[in-house]
Amino acid sequence: MEQPQSMEKVESVDVTEANAVAAGTNKLTKRIVAAGLGGKLMGTKSMVDVTADQLAKDSINDLLAKDKALKEKYEKQKHISEQPWTKDNWHKHINWLNMILVCGLPLFGVFATYYKPPTKETVMLGVVLYILGGLSITAGYHRLWSHRAYAARTPLKLLFALFGAGAVEGSIKWWSHSHRVHHRYTDTHRDPYDARKGFWYSHMGWMLTKPNPRYKARADISDLADDWIVRFQHRHYLLIMTFMALILPTIIAKYFWNDAWGGFIYGGIFKVFVIQQATFCVNSLAHWIGVQPFDDRRTPRDHFLTAIVTFGEGYHNFHHEFPSDYRNALKWYQYDPTKIVIYLSSKVGLSYNLKTFSDNAIKQGLVQQQQKKLDSMRAHLNWGTPLQDLPVWDKSEFFEKSKDKKGLVIISGIVHNVENFIGEHPGGEKLVKGALGKDATTAFNGGVYAHSNAAHNLLATMRVAVIRDGNANANTFSLQNEFLDKKAAAAAASN
Image (cartoon, rainbow, N blue to C red):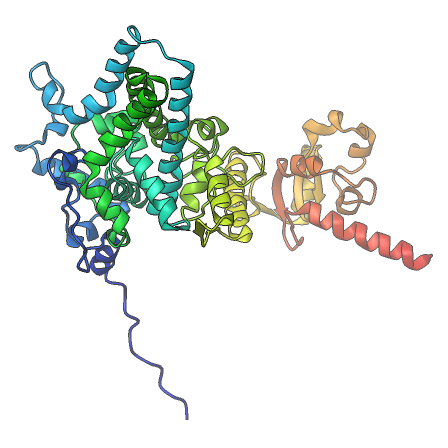
């Protein structure tokens, strides 16, 4: 006796609940607060104070529709970011704290160089601190904490936390949260540094202007809240940042070669400026120049120039496809010092569990994108009229029409008009003329010539009709291969 089929419905994923998990609002999380000015350095609470219910209604597919609805809602109460810049309100658009830190301090440093030329020792100090700070951002803030691409021991994490703070790019918690939001909402209004808004905006403009609070977003950072180093750095970020960025280079230069002022300018201000600009290039340059071997639906790109500027973060198209891979560059000759540092640290026991995507998954991505490009190229080429769109002729109709049109020939059950090609045929006019009004299938498909791909493609553009019950086959090249295989087998058998 047959069992009745189950009538139970498969439960669908609750989108609100899933958004709560992705945003980290489905559980109690340690609250980490940086007191006073230190907290303000990492942005405003309004940009992350959003519920899972709100996010559930904001899938990528309906963002544009929601934007339109919210635009109407804000007609009478527009945020400053939605108002045009005027001579009366321009100052309200600017995030003045970031303007001072990102633009004001470097300008002060440039002015100070007039009075204090650098010494060789101070320049070397600046270079060393630049390397330590830059790698602390790329290997620490980015690949370790933001993407958990590997795990690190406490000494290495402390090194990254200290020198990362010295780069003056915010705390680990703030930086990693913003970056996870960037990956979750790439190229949308919720992307903190949305590359669609232009090079300047994604490079620096997003920090120097006040963000629109209706595009606030969250990502789960409960793992960061469980890390005591992340908590400590965030709570005391202002003190750590000031010491590592400015005081430490000043002390070193003063103590070892009596150049405190030079240490402050070149080992402090200039170093911070260069590290910041290098990091900003990941948001701008890496979404602007280069190739897209894995996915061209979004803006991230791969380019060696970006890699050189950003300690190896330039293979950004790969990174957005495989974000938890500790590598950014795959080839041995591609520049990725961050990958090398992580790998070497694992060899001395400072890091472990280095994550990589399988070679198969990576090659799948490459092949899929290549196929997409091929399909796009193919769609713009003339491959001949599809057989279903051609008129159907009886053989008698073919014979009748051949009397008036002197260029008609049957090949593989399809009528072709080769009149304009008779004089161009490499084998001569007589050969073609001898086939007119006839079935030249065997002759064309290897009986006389084994025609090239180009010949088969050219022939396809000459289709004019299909012979009824003629076993029409548009893939003439495949038929030629079958004919040649049979011919070779017959020859082998006779020998």
